[in-house]
Image 1 (cartoon, one colour):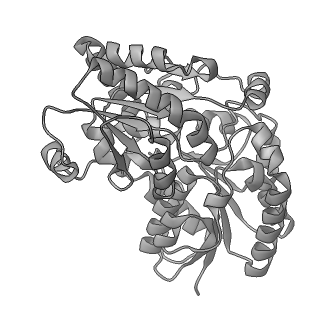
Image 2: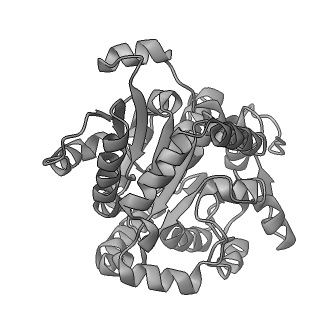
Length: 387
């Protein structure tokens, strides 16, 4: 009997994790039907999406409030589709503002719910623990410290390791990568990642380009690799008007760009962890609207904003937040790192430590095994998957 699983996410990172999970689900159970809310990657992995997740992502508290009427309509649409499909399992991937409401609806319909990639309850929203305990049958987490948090609360949780361990790898040698981009061995590559959401691009692109201009003034061999999603290419090209910078816009060789750059300056998020996994030193930035920032300061309670520092449990990479996102300060830190071999090597050793804390290969397969067991599919191994 064919089993049906619905996967729902609303973020670009969730689309990555969802696509990896979908491929493993198909490999373990070829006849399984996958549908839900996701982006291009999930569709390519065989998920029949009824809503495109790229339309759902928002940054900041105020921005979410502005889009609330639209998001409510989407929520009702999803509820209707879930009620019609009656899946054997509902897999919710991050995106807690909407996904926890869907979890409550699913439990009212007696559907099984697995939550994959935990909401950041360790940063804010600890009250969500009660909702998770009430509505989620299984938490599958990818950060090492999350298992203890949920375990203390009596929630059924398994840490599988981080799925990016298996995928964040360059596919080209540096010489081949340079050849593809028409660059020289003497060029010093610096990767700029303004973010994966519209508001992040709006907040980060200009300060990054202003920083690049200052770096270029001090380092004539600098070449800037602007790593982004295909849908943002035109917007970034327009933003580059008036800047006399040597650059390449990268939309399909992200891990090669990160691995072969001397330095990465990135919006806080999954990209910072990806840079860490290829051992490239990274400077983390993040900027919100003023209102969202003020609200966030009252709610968010973590010592760092980057996943790299949170996993390490200490400051491994420099962070520039809100008013600190200034080109002069960023360029000064970038030049310090580019000119200090000892600091670079120290940071690389710290990044190796971060990688070692993220588990072993096979995280996505372990998550898929748990999902298939919950869905009651045939021929699956035990759902107790250790790292």
